[in-house]
Image 1: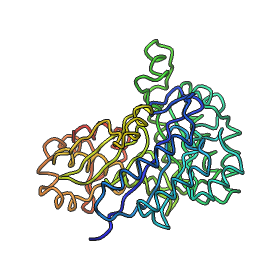
Image 2: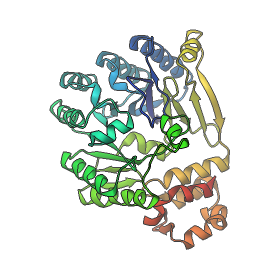
Image 3: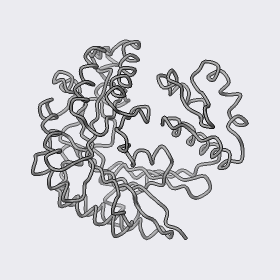
Image 4: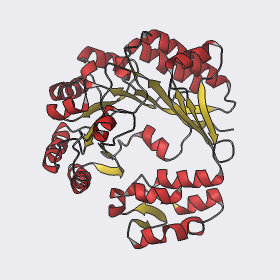
Length: 384
């Protein structure tokens, strides 16, 4: 039996401070040491490996959070080593670390490189100190620029930066300057996200009380359009709704999510996807660090929820994940997987969005049109 390619994700849920917009599973001021958490995480990796009977080969490893750049490089190295021994992490695997600019130095970045990290995702978010303060970030614009340059000096040839638009008080002209600064840095990858006000965040409370002044919808749409115009003009490929890469530098790990590649997630709050049984299974680990540790101390997997996908679930995922990418959805592959054509299943439900020019079919692939990219969520709900 051939080895199944898988992706690995490690969640480090600890931060110096919670950003005002953040809805990710993260904890501030924990009494737990990083070493104690990593010991538990390594135990989970060992326990999960015993439950897998099929040969596997990990093609990506991604450290997310939280703020995984708070980890000591020696602890990162132990996790990389465990991934290699337990999950056959390939020699050419993409190994990414999310990096907060306010938490790194040149020496630390060099040590991460020696620990096996070959790609950094730097959480710049903005090059404007006023915007960073409004977001509750712990770093300054100068520190973000320094972190990028120090990463280059440390030998990283695959650097990505994250930026957020449609921030309180931000205008399209301000966002254009952010994008031009990003192009000047010449990273290999840029992720741009429109601010989403998530329930339970400080921003949500401010919005509820009428204290959060966000850009008008037309300005937000213009900022989305500027992202593509400026970054594509700067040599980047707009390969996914929110992601741009230079040729050959697409995020292999994130592309796996959109292509439904099997993924094992480790750590408190991590998510996993397995293509078996039937049409696939998604499961999540408990978000509570205490519960996570307690389960592993008893030799149990710390699952919070597990969901077996039915055929309809899998078809919907295949479409709304695949349509995120510029490559689109291979309609022949869809029909082979599910025994029915796209038009048989969704033709009637999607007739009006085809007529509105939001979806198109070219060369056997279903894709979002340029206008469809702007309102992608309105398209995706048709498949749910």
